[in-house]
Structure formats: C-alpha cells, structure tokens
View (cartoon, rainbow, N blue to C red):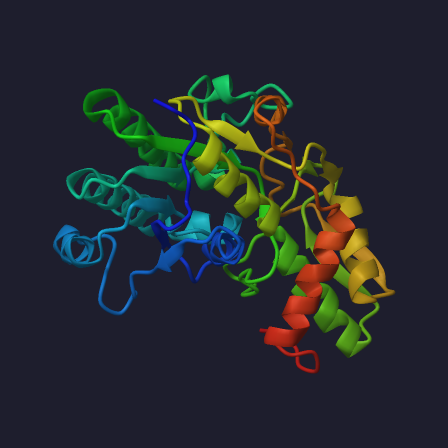
Length: 319
C-alpha cells in the first residue's frame, strides 16, 4: 500500500474526542484542512455494534483515529479489572469491524507502552511485544490493548484494510484526568503539589520509592506523531511514540513541585507499589521514518499546570 495519505478535505472521525489524546488529535487536525466528526457519547455507545453501525451509515467517515479507551492509573486498573478488559475489547472490536464494513480508507489504532512485557529490554523495541509476562498491576488493560492491535493487523492481512498502530509512552498534558483515584502519575502529582501549596503543608506523600524510571510524552506531541504516521506510514508493524528519554520518579516529582511552586519536603511511601522498574520505548524506528517529539518535560508540565489552573480552579483543593 502507498503510505502517502492526505487528510485534506477528508471526513475524519476522532473516536474518544473528549479524552486526553482525542482532544489533542482534534487540536492537531485543525491544521490539516479536514472535517472532524465525532460520535456523541449520549447516543453512540462504542461497545454496541448496532449503535455504531447506525452512526457510521449516516456519517461515513473516511479516516478514523481510535483514541477511545477505558484508561486509568495503577489503582483504577487494580480495582476495576473487569471494566478495563471488557470495555477496551468491546470498543476496539466494534470500531474495527465497523470501519471495515463502511469502507474507511485508513484507521490508526492506539496501543500503550504498558502492554510490553514487565521485564522487556530497555529501551523497548517494537519487537518486544508478546515476548514475556506483563506487569501484573495493569495486565487486564494490556491484554485488551494487545488484542486491539492484533485485530488491526488481522484485518490488514485478511481484508487489506489500511489499519496502522502506534504505541505511545506515558502521556500527559491539557485535558488530563485529575481525579486522584483514577489519574496517572503526572496529574496526580500536580494535584498533590497544588493542594499542598494551598494548605502550606510541610510535605507531600508519593507512592513508591521514587527510584523507578519513566518517560513522559506531551500529548500534543503524541497527536502530532499520530497525524504524521496517518499521512506517511502504511505497514503492519507497530510504531513506538516517545520523548526519547526518561527520568527517575523522584526527579519528576521535584520538577512538578518547581512548576507548581510547592516548597515543602517529599516523603516516599515505600509500602506502595512502584510498578514496572523502568519503562522507556525505543523511538529509533519512528525517527527513521522522520518523526520525533519536540516538547521538553518542564515545558510540558508548565502547559499542563496552566490548563489545570484555567479549567479545574486555582483556589480550591481537588478531592
């Protein structure tokens, strides 16, 4: 298949347009001269084939970014495993089949770097997928997302569908979920540091030892990568999207505190789980195809905190 694909003058469906990634893709598509369409959650449950097929029949999108998913941090994954596996399997299967039936020209599916084996080589190459046991704290989500990517590959092989997959690393940015019971590490730390600053607290508590390493990809960079590969890539192989470097959690916490303006101490609760010891994707394949991330971590954190202040409220603590 010819990897060159234009979005200009196309009807482009962003599934999950209200979420962190979907809203960033919508922002990025504003520069592409396309018509962005969305499926309203109130009338189209993406887990229900009959509802989605009715919408597809009426709207007829030509390109699809599948950013809709059930997502959350360690606590959410650990306490709601059935929702994470069922919802993600159902959404992916329903959308992929509907895209085939209604002749979508191209679709991009989104994985997550947490679907790689817990002890994968570092940095993690795309070929590491399915080579070892998963991280137990998010295995239900990981298995569902792996199934989604494999479904896209299967439809590509059997039906010739131009479906591609990307694998973003840990994402953060404007539009993130700041609910402490569901959020990932960056928004959770921003809320903790913000609340501690308002309360003049002497310290903040952080889960784990602070020694594990993580990479953090600014969501608008991820969206830029997805649009780039939608336009310039057509192959079965998944593509890692990452910032090209990682940091210890302790360093991330200090950066967040600096951005928020919290001056107190950091207190690490070593009784809480760390998760995977290190998780950094190898981005050499993406770079060989002409794409790399642009936003430094501190700049991304500043943009995220600015969005938090504008949208969640600067003068009140967040439960």
